[in-house]
Length: 431
Image 1 (tube, rainbow, N blue to C red):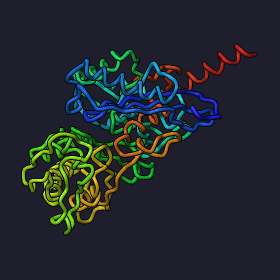
Image 2: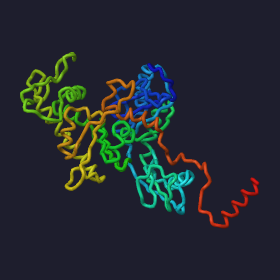
Image 3: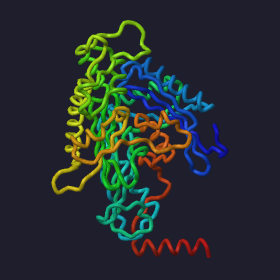
Image 4: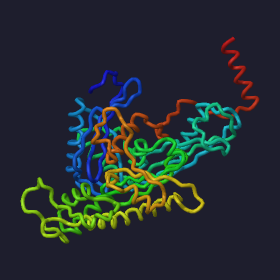
C-alpha cells in the first residue's frame, strides 16, 4: 500500500467470467480518491456461458484469484462485490407517480414516492438485482435529478430494474460464499462496465455498450443518463478461438495464441504472402501439422484472418439485431449518429473497431477502464473493465429503493380545519 493518504474504506471485487476470474482490492482515501491496492486473475474453471457448472472448481478459481490480489495488496478482505454476466439478465424501466397537491416537494415526499415504487415491484419468478431511481419527473417534465424544493401537482420517478434468473444467481453467490467470503452485493456487469468505460455525457446522449466476453456477449443501451435496454446472447470471443482450432485442426491454446498474436479483424494485401507458425518457439515436442499448412507447421495469415472475420460477421450480426430490437437506430436514414463502445476481453483483437464500424454503420470505439491510481498496466485493458467498474460502483453505492426506510411520516395535503387544529395544538404546547 504505497500511499501517504489515510484510507477511509476498502472494497473487494470479484468478476466471475467464462474465460477468466479476476479480483481487485481498492481503497477510497479520505479525500475521495480511488486507489487500487492489488489485483489478480486466473483462468476460469467451473463456468460455462456465464453459468456455474462445477461448484468446487468455481469456488477454487474465486479463492485463487482473490488470494493473488490480497498478496499484492498486502491486506485481506472478508466481503466482495460480484459481477454478474449472463444468467438471463434483463433490464426494465418502470415509471411510478404520486400526487402531492401542488405544494413544494420535501424530502419525505421523495421517500414516499420511492416506497410506492418499492411496493410496485411485484414478484414474477425472477431475482431483482437492482431497483434504482434513474430520474424524476414533475407534471410531465422529465430529466429532473433532484426534485426537492420544486412545486408540482404530481411527482414521479423512472425506476431502473435489473432482473436475472434466480438459480444461476444463487449458484454464483454460493461459489463466492464457499470461498469464505461475504457477498456485499451482486452487480449486473453492464452497470459496472458502464461506470468504468462510459462518460456521463455519453450516457446522456445515447450510447450502446457491447461487452464481448469469452462465451457471453452483453449488449446494453444507455439514453438519458440511464440504462434503458439489455440483451445477452451466448456467443463470444471463445467461439472465434474454437473456429480457428477447428479450421486448422490444432489445439485450443494454440488457436488462442494465433488469434491474439497474429490475428486481425481487418485483411491486408500482404496477408496471402505471409506465413505464420502454428506453434511458438518455446513449445517443445513435435510441431503440429496444421490443416492447410505448408508441411513446416505454418499457415497463410490470410486464411487465419478469413476464419476470424467470418466468425466476427456472425457475431456483429447478432449485435446489430440486438440493437435494432432495443430501438438503437444507429445510422438509419434521418436519425442522429450514435456511438457504440466495445469492451471486454474480445475487444483486444486488432482492428475490431474498424470491422464493427463497417458492419454496424455507426462510430465505434474500444472501451477501456478509467485510469485508477495503482492499477497495473496489465489490468488496464478492456478485459478488466467490469472489474474496475465494480469498485467504482461499490464506492458510489447507488440508492436501491428496496433499502428505503420510513424515516418520515407520510405527508398529505391538509384542509383548513386540520391546519387550524395543528396550529392551535402547537400554540398550547409552546406558549
